[in-house]
Amino acid sequence: MHIILVEDDPQLGAAIQRALERLAYTVSWLRDGREALLALRDETADLVLLDLGLPGKDGLDVLIEARRAHVKTPVIVMTARDGLEARVHGLDAGADDYLIKPFHLDELGARIRSLTRRAHGLAANRIEVGALSIDLGTSEVAFRGERIELTRREFSLLQILMERAGRLVRRESLENSLYGIDNMVGSSALEVLVHTLRRKLSFDTIQTVRGFGYMIPREPK
Amino acid sequence: MHIILVEDDPQLGAAIQRALERLAYTVSWLRDGREALLALRDETADLVLLDLGLPGKDGLDVLIEARRAHVKTPVIVMTARDGLEARVHGLDAGADDYLIKPFHLDELGARIRSLTRRAHGLAANRIEVGALSIDLGTSEVAFRGERIELTRREFSLLQILMERAGRLVRRESLENSLYGIDNMVGSSALEVLVHTLRRKLSFDTIQTVRGFGYMIPREPK
DNA sequence: AGGGCTTCTTAAGCGCTTCATAAGCGGATC
DNA sequence: GATCCGCTTATGAAGCGCTTAAGAAGCCCT
Figure 1 (cartoon, rainbow over the protein chains, first blue to last red):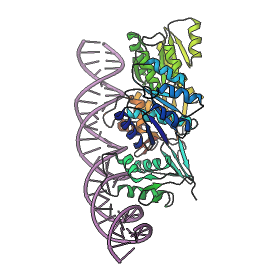
Figure 2: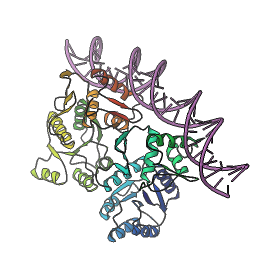
Figure 3: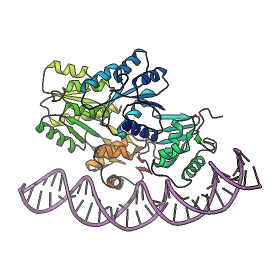
Figure 4: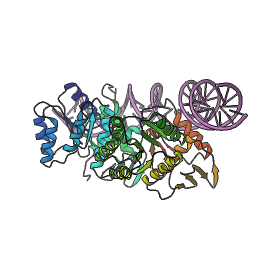
C-alpha cells in the first residue's frame, strides 16, 4: 500500500509518516502543492492524504485539478477545525473522506482501512496471496484451504508481509511495526517469530532476503 | 449494540437515552449537529437516531452529508413536523425509517429491532444457532429447548455473538458494542460477562480464541 | 425516599499460552 | 577459512483469560 502524504507542517508530517509506516504502509511525503499534483497525476499511489492550506498551490485546487484529469485515487482531506465550508467544498471537489485537525492517529488508520476496503470492492476485508488467505475482520487464516491457528504476533507479522506481498519488507520496518519504534528488541525475536510462522505454514512461503529482510512472493512458484 | 442519539431537547433526550439503555443498548447522546456528523462519519455506531431541527446544523443536512460520504449506518429520523414533506425529505435524504413526535418508546424499540434485523439480513425476529435460539423482539432465550433467563448485558453479548455466528468476533469489537467506544472498561469485565453467560448456557458453546476474541461456532460438533 | 434485591464492575490469584532472550549451529559471503 | 547473518531450540518471564469474591450501581417495591 503506497500512500502519498501532502502536508507542509514538518512536525505533523513527520508524525503522520511515522504512524503510517508503523502500519506497514509505504509513505511518500510531499510538502508542496505542485509536487502533489504531479504525483497524483501518475496514479501510482493507492491513497492520498491531502492537507488543504498549502504553499505553492492550494490543496483544494490540487484536488479539483486532479479530478478534472480523471485521477480516481481515493483522497482523504485534512483540514483545520474552523471551516465547515471547507469540508463541504472538499467533498464537492471529490474527496472521499476528510479529517478535522487535530485528529488521533488511530482514527486516521481506521479511515484508511475503511476507505481501502471500500475501494477494493465492498466487504473484501480479505487478502489472498497464492495459497494463503487472511481475513482482517475476523483474524482468520487459511493456508491451502485449511484453517490455521496463529497467535497475535504471528498474525501481525503475516498481515504485514501479505499487505506488501511481492515486495521486500525490511527487517527494521518489521521490527518497528511489531515492537514499536523506541523499543529496540534485544535479540533474534523477529527470527524466532518468522520461524514459528514458517512452521505453521510451510518453510518456503516466506523468503529470506539476506541482509535486508523478508518477503512473500506474489507469484509463488 | 451502539446507538448514537442526536437530540437537543434535554428532557426528551434523557428519556430516550434511559429507555434505550434499559433495552441494553449503549447510547451516545449528542446535542449538536456538527458533533453528530463527526460521529456518524466514524461509522462506529450500529444505528443513529436523528432529530431534525438541531442547533449548529440542521439534521437533514447532517444526513445528506453523511450519505454523500458513503456512510451506510442505518438512520432513523425523528421529527416534530408532522408534515408529509418532512418525511419525504427524510427518506429521500437516505433515512431508513422515521418517527413522528411524540411517539411511544415501545414503538421506538420495535423500529430499532426491525431495522437492525434488516441490516443483518435476517428474515425473522429470531436467530437460531445449534441448540440456541434467541428472540430479538421479546428478548427470550432458549437453549436445548429450555428457557433461559439472561440479564441485559448477557443478552447483548449473546446477540452479538449469534448475529455473527461462525465468525470470530474480536474482543475489541465486543467491548465497543457493549461499553461504548470512548469508555474503556477497566478490567476483565468482558471475561466475567462471558463467564456468567457460559455458566447459564454451557461451557462449550462460546469458544475462546486466545489473543483475538470469542465466537459461537455455526456447526456445533 | 429508603431498604432490599439484582446486576455490574473491579480486583486479585492462578494456570496455561505465548513471547523474548540467549546460546549453539549452519550456511553464505568476502 | 574467518566472519557474519539467520535458523533453531530450550528456558524463564510476561501476558492473557478464567474464576471467584466483594464492593458499587441500578432497580423495584413499599
